[in-house]
Image (cartoon, rainbow over all chains, first blue to last red; front, side, top):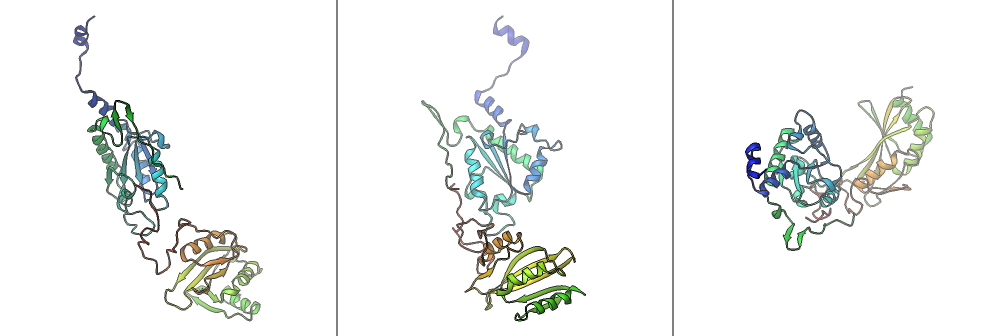
Length: 180
Length: 162
């Protein structure tokens, strides 16, 4: 049986490999639930049947950073906690994304104080800043959809810190913090 | 007898050399005295059969900023037997920023004194493990002192590199 006869019966679809890969990638984002304070409660609600993050392919919350590609920093990050957050971020494999969930994480929020980091972008690259104190679960879903858009528009060769040349894919060495 | 009158009476009998300043405001009994007696008074309050303040609810301090005796260490005690609360106060000066630890009397005072040390820099003599409670160990300041700026000292708490 030839190809023409085969597609006549079954139908076919044309696309680009990049688009197909991007579609697959963006619908299986595995989050790292970095739940530090009350935003984590709303993050848990996102997993429940009412809001159901599984509709977006992100229901596999992994509690080991080695298996994650999206870190949801949900809560107030203190100076004492900052090295821990950074260490977990460094342990995630590239490519990776970060959602700064809520006012505290994005800007320090109501904790204008000596002990709270005034925005995690001081030590982490942040992709999405999510407003709210805490943000509603649907707001977090919106942030996830924005991350999906970003992933969908990115070719694999454009991922940050990854270079593809004749020698294959080069992943940068991890910048692991040693002294804590 | 009512504990509001019994406690001052007993203390004056037991420690005649000590000057107790007693305040009974809104049914809250507060007793203020010199810091050198803190260990003896606390031990007496805990072990006396009529009082039995077996539970040390909280230890904290007050920073009066410009006053001569800059700090006041505050002890909140509770007698489970009599369901009675008592507050002790002792002044500590900045130049001699030390007071005896009561962690040998109440085990729970250990962490409360560590917290007070962390936040105010008051040292507790004979404390078994006087380390900071909340702030990183290499931090040089005491955040609840009145001369500590609200937003902290820039660069005093290191952040990881971006």
